[in-house]
Length: 206
Image (cartoon, rainbow, N blue to C red; front, side):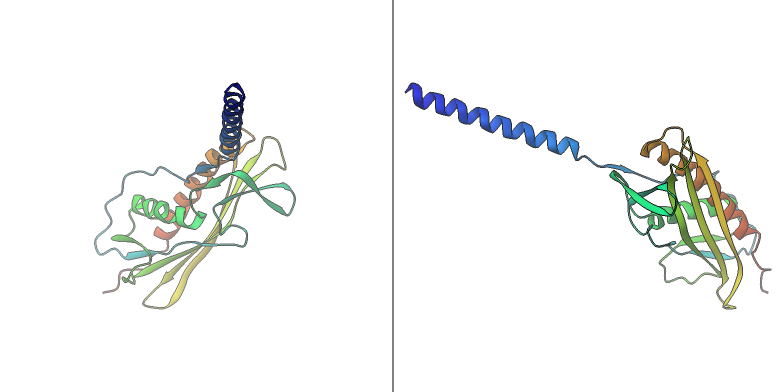
């Protein structure tokens, strides 16, 4: 009986040990997920007979069509954090933020988030050129570049094209510091994009 009890105790200790290792491994592999976010002023009432704008989901340059968070510690070498990521790709996170920024500017009767069956009078096409935390200087910084193109849909022509660039210093040299800096950069760039679009609206067609 004593031998059997000893074996049972040893088996229980082994199971507890394995469970402890499993929970430790699970904790060590925890992945942090972050969102891009920005705050804009309330929507402004548009002028009479203002155009309708369709906002397509931004394309992403090579290396950025992923939820993985990119960083650069060596020039021209893009790497990714192992346990920190975005909740979605930059393009998908930016689309609703673009809509809010454009509504805040008030230059359009309606801002439609694509894809949509509504063509709109104008279409905004964008591309995420880069969104990366750079450890090439101290403190680190976040570099965000967005290329925008405004298209006159009925006329089938490009009205204006511009590249917007923002660099924000990170408060801490870690992924979270990069997230906070990225959100500041996004707010700056999208505000500029909204003003850019409002400034290139063609005259109302009679």
